[in-house]
Every structure is written in structure tokens, then in C-alpha cells.
Image (tube, rainbow, N blue to C red; front, side, top):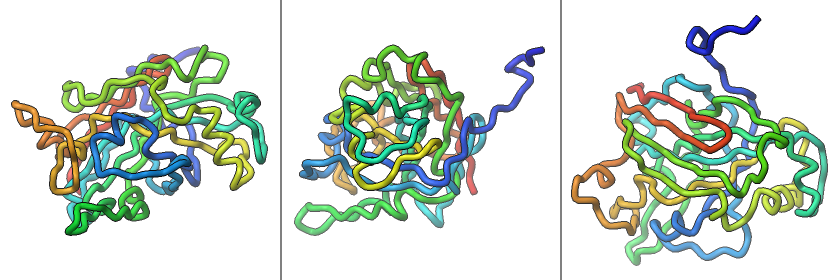
Amino acid sequence: MGVPLAQTRLKAPLDPTLILCSGENYWDHRDEKPEVTRKDPEFFVKTGLGVIGPDEDILRDERVTRKLDYETELLIVIGKPGRHIPAERALDHIYGYTILNDVTARDRQVTLRPDGSSVYNLGPGKNFDTCAPIGPCLVTREEIADSQRLELRTYVNDELRQSNTTGKMIWTCAQLVEFFSTFVTLRPGVVISTGTPGGTAWGTDAELGGKKPMRKDGIAAGGYLRAGDVVVCEIEGIGRLRNRVRAA
């Protein structure tokens, strides 16, 4: 017998110990921040200690950051083990997909040098309590006709902040599986995050090298998350991941 969704509280659909992440995987996100030149996907990790589920609070701890940002990302879930997996066989190793909000402490992640170049510190910028909301559900690969044709959006307090499609990824899901399996054996339950498009608060933060112009209403320029904000990460075919921001 089913239970109405309104009468339940969902937890994260899985609890990974480690999240393999590929940053800078959309051109419009690259264009809104300090320039970085690379020939391979960016490779960093997030700890599973930061995983929370739908409707759980994202903590804004000023001892960690005053520039807390959102990043809606498609999350790949591995179902079949493999190493050195060629892209043409990558889908055989994918169990399904869900949504990750790659919550980021921008003032920990980015330091600008006097000459305008930047230093990235992805350890502290990407890893802290509640930095990895995941949900609302896990959708199997068979339910997604094409993972490179999914609409992706982010709303903060019902205002649209990010709007793009996974078709604009620089490296596809299959290519990312191939890339990460070069380094480690991908086992069932391993997850790979695929990057976020433009529209982040960082993009308009000139103090950290943001390159997008300020909006006339000032919302984007003041777009870092504040206590009381509600963030919704939406990907077509998967659903809406909703979390409120709370002061620590």
C-alpha cells in the first residue's frame, strides 16, 4: 500500500562516501569566472559527510563562508564495476541518475592574485557540512531516453538563476565515465557529478573574478545564499530538489 508523498519526508536516495566531481563542464560557466585553460575535465572530490536529502536545511556557517553558492548538477550513479571503460560502453555501467546541488564556499574556493589570475582551493571550497544535497529520487538509466537532452534549472526564492540543458556539457556523461575510470575502478554506488552551467552567484562577484554584468534589480549581484532562502534544483525527468538555507 502506498503512502502519499505529502505525508512523508524523503531522505537522500543514496549515501555515497565520496562524490567524484567534474567542474568547468559548461562553456557559459567558464565564461562567467576567471579564465582557466585545461584539456581534460576538472577532477575534484566532495566528501559524503556533507550529503543531505530533500527539504533538509543547508547550513550557512559564517565561520566557513560568507559567499555560499548553489550549483545544480546531474549526478551519475554507477551500477556495474569497471576500469578503463571506453565511452562507447559507458552506459552499460550507469545504473541511473539523480540531482546534486554542489553547494560551494566561494571565498574558500577562490583567491585572486594582484595580476588578476586566480588560485583554486577545492578542498575547503567544496567540503563542509550540508555541502551536498542529493535527491529527490534515483531514476534508472532506462527511464532517461538521453542524458544529454535534459533541461536543467535553479531557482532561489522562485527566481530563475540557472537555465540550460545537459546537451551543452563540454564532456558528456559517457566521456566522464571513461575519464574517471582511468584513475579508479568504478564500483556500484560510486557517483560522478557532471558540473554546473552558468548563472552562479560567483559569476557576478567581481571581488572573486566574476565576469558577468550586474543585473539592474541587483538580485544576481547579491545572489549568494542567505539564511531563509529556498533553493530548488530541477532536472527534467528526475524532479525538483528543494532545500532551505539556515544560519548555523
